[in-house]
Image (cartoon, rainbow, N blue to C red):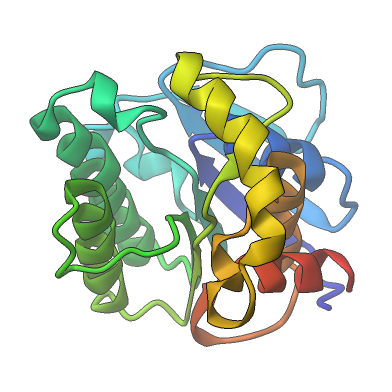
Length: 225
């Protein structure tokens, strides 16, 4: 665990996972600067080391100047319910905008990039969602960050239903199914959104390098350190 103060830039802090990640980050004392980028500011954050900037996520020129002098980037940006948007808009947000952000971070000298992805992703998947996420990860790997952390949760368990009847059913049923996901299937267990956010935040302070894929069991391992 590093004791040096670090500077973090974050894209997507207003979503469900981003909110929990931000809340966890705000509990740490060894942050020198935390810069939040998004399409809107987050109210009631009265912390002197936090800076917020409203940006155009589709135009990297709108945030290039805000990336300098950071060591870590966290990206939890993504369409909450992909079925509610066109395929083109999904790819534009979840892949193109994220990749542009990552490229800008790399050019700004950021060493560690963390991404919220999904379990089961593959650039060869027949699912547009899983294939797009898999393609994104391959392109992120090609950027050669000193450290690249890919968080791959399965069902994210939130305390409230965000996605109508289907979401309500999944939130009720998935925790009952989780005990049956064992061995190699353990990564498909549902993960409470608070635990996931804590893992994304705390992983920043754990010294490591290279490429790492993190699933259900790693999330709990991280928060227990």
